[in-house]
Image: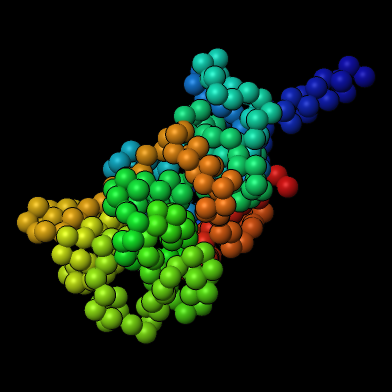
Length: 343
């Protein structure tokens, strides 16, 4: 009897202290991801432990999973293997516990934001990278707001400084950041042209774009239109092409770049743009978004006012995380994909 009671106590302790999580021990394709039972994370004094309900899928997750470009590894994410074995950043959930210095949240609060190891039943986040969940969103919708929404908001409002009536061209308008960028630009009063493939044009129009360019049929320079702002999300167009479509005093904001090689992944294009900007009348720049509580509150306000809304393409279970990333890599995702951890 005593042995049975001891065994039961051990089993209960294991259930309490462990969780299901996606784990990767090395860099590689989505095949390196495994669903395992691991120890629940511990929090520091300024951190929050979340019971994860959902987690977002974005290009950043792919870069950290593959370790590409190599600049990612040099930047401190792990030279030979991921420093954080459980991937995932964007998330939503319910506060399980808080560190002793946390003042904004308490257990039971519904939140969204950016954490560490989001593809798991529990994850840790700084309180400065969380905000209350918008009342009009599900957990799945809220899980895809923070990273892409912050990039669009800060890039257009703070970097490009979009003004009412300006003409704004958004490259990658049907993607994760792009769907937010179209809506943010419209909220700022711009006339928006989105660039998308033939099967995604209807979506771009539905979220507010005034005009849509099908990149399979025409180049952004074909119409002769000059844009006050070009917001380039993960594209690979040459700078000279972008500059031909940009007004003489216009602003080009390069958010990211793909297909730029295994070492730099397109970052070299951003650096060349900023260098060239010193010698021309156009402003050619890039930026890294700030993961802060204040702008997450701004996104919450805009969402609750129906100024912007998340575009969720598909919902995957935790064990389907590899499939979600494969679909993202193959370009099958419109807007955002989300991992449902707790239904």
